[in-house]
Amino acid sequence: MREIIKTYSQSVPALRFIGKKYGDSAHGYGEMWGEWFKNDWFDIITKQIDKNANDSYEDGDAYIGLLRGNSTEENPIEYWIGMLTPENTDVPEGFGYVDFAKGEHGVCWVYGKENELYGNYNQCVERLINEGFEFDPQLPLCFERYVCPRFTTPDEKGNIILDVCFFIK
Image 1 (tube, one colour):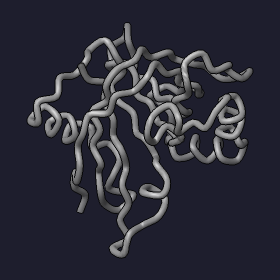
Image 2 (cartoon, rainbow, N blue to C red):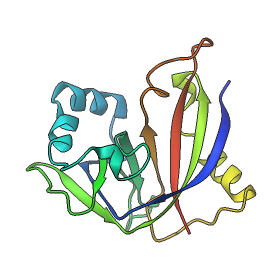
Image 3 (cartoon, rainbow, N blue to C red):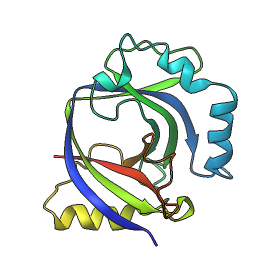
Image 4 (cartoon, rainbow, N blue to C red):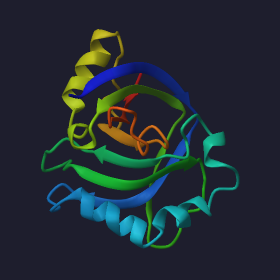
């Protein structure tokens, strides 16, 4: 059974998200992630970074699934796959980017079996609000941060941790 085992605020510098944008009508994000690994697209982004990606902020070398928009016709949901990089990182051909100002992330560690971890955004929002976090409505909904080894190496119960992060004030 999944549970939120940790929440915290994380200060981050100005960042550039580099990745590829997908709509919300896609058949499955799992296939898209498979395409990323097959094509070594994360390696292409990593080669653009002048220093270690983790030097920008803790867990800065993680892969990201970014959700933007609010399901309206004017602002449809976008799902992006990519990485947060230092500001002004060169964008490789074939990739898009979104720049983010210096700010704060509200982070939830969702613990459980992999198939239980996705789509728990409302539970995370409720928990962060109950702990006094304020959300910035001008920024994307949230992003999933796949940090190694806590996401890739199951514990003795077969559970892993997915970071679900929100832009907060």
